[in-house]
Length: 200
Image 1: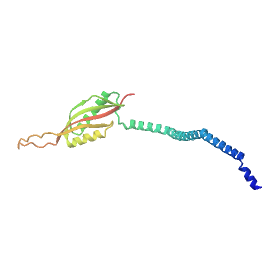
Image 2 (image 1 turned 90 degrees about the horizontal axis):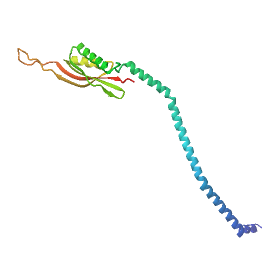
Image 3 (image 1 turned 180 degrees about the vertical axis):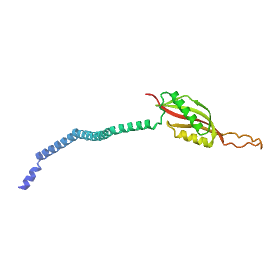
Image 4 (image 1 turned 90 degrees about the vertical axis):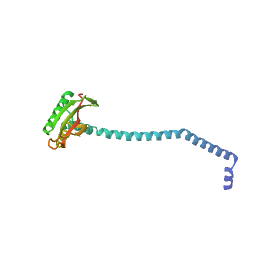
């Protein structure tokens, strides 16, 4: 009886039906792969894009959360700059230049030096600042020069020395020995530079 059933399975009609059913399954699987595989890939790409956008959004949220702190820090830095007095607070460039010339004259005279001349140079505009430059010629000993440079270095508003030229002065001839006595005096030329914020 079992042998008869086995023989029935191998009959040509059943064989063709199984073959047709197998071909149908293959066609269905290929159709699914052709139509749904790209959709599946696109879905996976969209999920990746969504995850990347979520990460970026979280980064932007963290940055925005720090906005108030950064703004407060900027306000603190601005107020510190104003209280430190590094920039000249005069209303015009001419007043700032005159104030700087008066400061330099006083520093040189108080140190025991002699001011030969001061000359205000043209104002140089850079970004948000006006660069105020004064050319100075003075004479004095090395001790005087050191004192003057220290006063300039510690001044407020901030003054920077630029293009300094130091030369020893020729000594005076001694009448008795007819020799030139060495001199401790120096001829000094330099430019003093200060900065002023442009009016807003």
